[in-house]
Image (cartoon, rainbow, N blue to C red):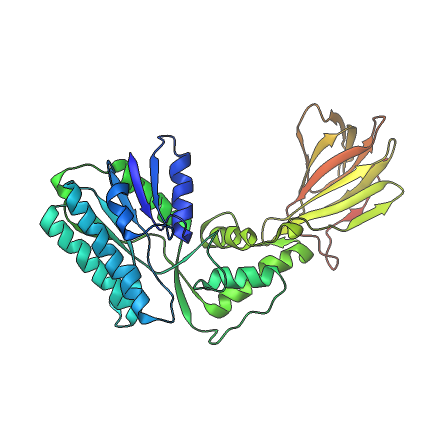
Length: 375
């Protein structure tokens, strides 16, 4: 499809264009940006099959700019669409502010009315997204996104300003918006059911106080020191973490870990989780044996990623003995079972490197690690 994106260089526009250009079904993207004028619209609309109208003004010291950038631009777009004499579907990103009587909200609501009139007169399918605050990569910091501003400043050790920490922010993640857009684009048909004005709500919508938002972002920052990662695999925390690190300057793409070295090799903790243990690795020089202890409840998984190793086990009650040999070539997990003392010996000619996962974060006050000889 030939898709016109107004505001293609804006926050949502950049994300949408990138996805459209990478879709399995490649779309031809026609961009309308600040470098264009409304006089360019008729030419840009030629042979267009779908329109994402994302352009607009959402922050200005001059109230007239809201009218020009939101209402007037939408009027000119609709006039150009009518001149094409095609029922091109239009997606419009409005705002929840359209429900309010401020200057910005009034201009967005007036733009909605223009599109509604286009639907009545011309029969174009119209999809209006009244969006709350949108967050994600490529939003401009210190502009109108508190997430972008806080992420940018915190990642650079700059101060943040909080007027009311209890104020609640309603937010949607930009990737969820784009997913919604793409589903609509791919599933769209010219059936009569789509020839109407439709208000679309993006889900999920998140709510968080300004104070909680700042605290969460500060925990992301602290994780480089304490190694404790938040639950960044799903939902809001996943989206927020992706957004936060997108504002890291390149010189902060790396950070150092503490290396615990002795005559045997080294031990390095990599990451700790709130409720799923921690990840580490250790090295052992040729002939070196590490371990010689057991656990009551703690469990561990070992993976040899370089070298050859012999793992030895003895049941602390029955005395039953077991040993196994493994190497980097096998990619097998060796499970450390409670009640069995265990050790590992480097039986190769080069340094042994082992990845280690423990089901709990090490606690100096209650380590659940007890020395016990295998021999």
